[in-house]
Length: 373
Image (cartoon, rainbow, N blue to C red):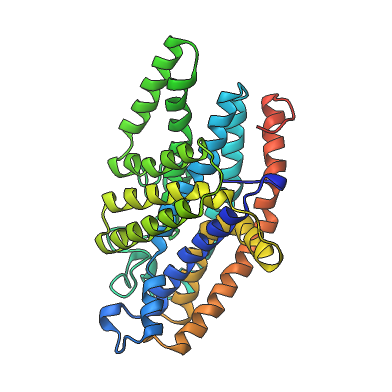
């Protein structure tokens, strides 16, 4: 998912940034706070903590709809204008993914090594799985093999290989990468002029989805819904936006309570329906504009690098202790959130902000014209 320059959609920037923060807060809550069933009190503030701190998965579903809206929508627009080429598209998508992913994998290895030296014995083999809801388990310990590393580089984690190291959030990048491949194939089945090409693309796209695990293939439905929403722009409608917001909140409740694939798909499609109006609303200036752009800029890096850092710090400084809900643990969560944001900003500065340079290098290596996709 990406936007650049004057083509940025401010409110989608804010949503993307908030979703990345939501994933981090969810992991912080899992590491630092006892489960809801073990809490001694359930005040209003505590209920908000458990509610907001339990939406990490739903935030990832929102990412899928956002990615479909931004990447899928721009792909359809390029196809309609006759500007789509596979080489340009492949370079754009791989440079976007790899510029962050490969450094994130290297940093995961380094942080896991430090954490295994400083933390409790067996922590990365799942010794504390009964305490924390995220992280290594005895059946899925942190795997630092070359197979897992290159499996993640080529987006085969959870499909053929385990996720590399402790970085569990990287599961969603396998989904993203295969949606990037399958969607243009399926779109060409409708848009290409040659019947033979349409048939071949349809077969290739459906085969790609059929070879994926069922849950990965079906979670592509919100991605496609986002792309179709972007392909049918309309003037902003307050009533439609309110309806979309209500539908999204209802689907969020169903998804959070049921934790089923059907609930995830319903939530993603509701968000996709809502994105069109959110994108069309007038931008806001001031602090909101700066926060939206800043959070959006680092959102991918934040998502990809935060968990090994937080897990290492918990193993080293706090494990196996967790806290009852209260203002003390909220202050600790805020401190570690600030640490994660500072860390992600530094990694973004070193790597993600150079995505255009990486893209240009890949184009030159492939002999492509120096133009944007």
